[in-house]
Length: 447
Image (tube, rainbow, N blue to C red; front, side, top):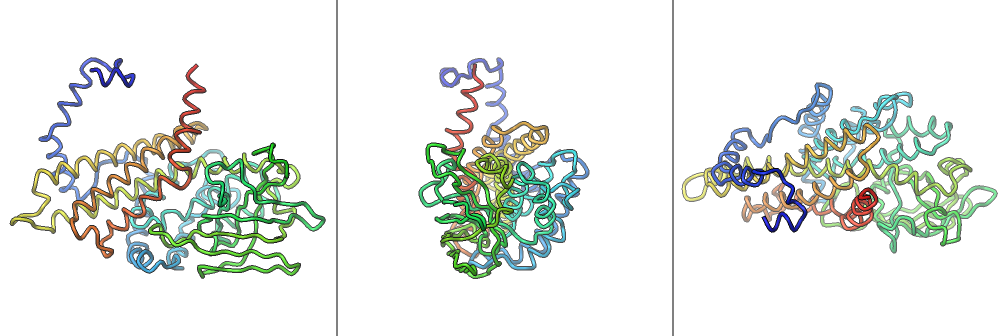
């Protein structure tokens, strides 16, 4: 096979390509699509243990009963996430999935549980990415940063609060001129007798309005040649706002301004531009306090790996939601006297959608298990690349199956399509992950 050889696949076992060719026939794909319709979109056993299956069932029920009835209004009217959703998430302990039990969270004290976080994220994203599927990412990033570098006093104070979802939190890393190049951020933090003064701008800080604390990466050493070694991580407290713009004024005159960025999808949490002007942060709110100066980049990266595997889980949830809606519609919509699900073309399309979902889901679960063993850092970026691109394709196919109604705002698949597009952009763009993380890791390990 010349093409296989060109891409380094000439060592494939003999007969594998013929096996693939014989398996993925039109007849087999048609039968697979028919089976998917008969199972109402269920693509098969997830191979989860009893505990994880119970978690998936619990959050699936919450998603269907509480989130789903609100999802369309959140999207179409650009609403903030309703209190009914936040209340339920708090009661289920969702915000504590990455907080150890000794700090009132759900994470076992002696082990990681990435897989639990994955199945919960997947079920919430299945009905609404912006309304529920991304709620646990921010507390996870902050919790991991605190566990990595926080003082014992900081952990004891903040982690139980994060687990309770009070306050809610947001992450402020990206700047107008620096996105994936995290090591180059410029927001300035100046040491004073009262604490640290923050000056500068952040952008794409999701949930910054509703949040009561912001995790802010700032430059504590003005020497730009230090790069990431000049960065520190701060916890900035603020009031919670429902509005799309807010203003915080401190007694000494410091100001924080926030304004939501209008987006085509991923609505509910709202992403903000932030402007810090002479804004005072106490010394106790620098993660690690004196020992944390210059280590903010490392604390941030500790949280981001979890964010990437979570994003793959979100992609799986969006894919499942799109497939569920498509299977249902293909049974309801009739063309030339019979449901479009009875046509071979439709069944083949559904089968291919199911294949990509299954591959993405099991890849995500496998990486989650690796991460629980202290490995899988590069693989987390790899699965994000794969699953997020698959979600774009599946939601596009779901729209196509719906025909003209797929382009209507009132149809859920149009929302899934818009939401899926952001997955390849946030938590590390696919270009940055491919070049800086996956590519670099492969080259470093090639020798």
